[in-house]
Length: 344
Image (tube, rainbow, N blue to C red):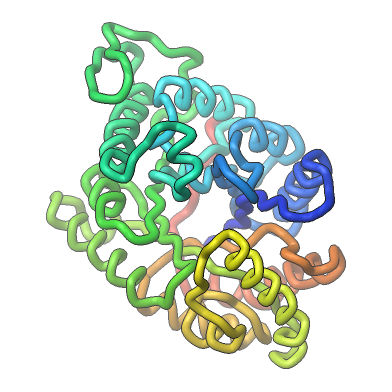
């Protein structure tokens, strides 16, 4: 199994945006130091997030790191001009030395949809059309194209040409079969959000992905799945882990209610039992990931990159414990395909 650390760059405290961005970059450097395979930055265009420009943040992380792969989580192609998105990410591909991977999706949130004049009726079609054009731009030196949501292209050139040809693109999915079907059609990997709900709806979408993958004529052995988690804290005993993490969980509940979201899990114990949150002893977390793997068959998993209310010392200690006692077991028990090699 391979492991990513991902942040949506929530900004809901008294620190300045400058301080929060510096923390994100420092967490990426820490993730590389501790042995994570990848670091991801989300894209949101509304409060309480300040992750509206992932390529800028990832470019700075690229300059501070040398090995770790850099992910978008997700690139909201339903909101973006695919030509401009291509230019940004092709540039980042060079600046990172070919360490870039994309996770695309339609995005969430009514405010950002209003900001970009996207409606529930067209967001999926925008995502599909945007990806089809983005995919061609990455692969073809000249593109002639016509669609619904941006001006047509006639023998268009886009610069710079990317370093990775092609680049691996994952499709992020939380609730909809549209993203799953798009991933299966193109033979792309799927990344299940696996955050808000119990395991069943995510397992159903992953099963649908594998079904559609085969229906489109792909070798079933080639399907690749990643899955998220809703939070992480490991300690030597489950009692210590729960005691430390409880106020953090309560703070998340308060944030959900503040923005008008009714949480699925109202207690930490329920979230640990039925959700994807990883809180407990190392062995408890290993057992839970293996149980989820039996349903998902996933080879890649993400943890939250942020401290989420932990002290810096607690945050680092928990990540060190993950890499020293949890990750080695999961890497051994769950074989995974190698990530793309960095181009020479």
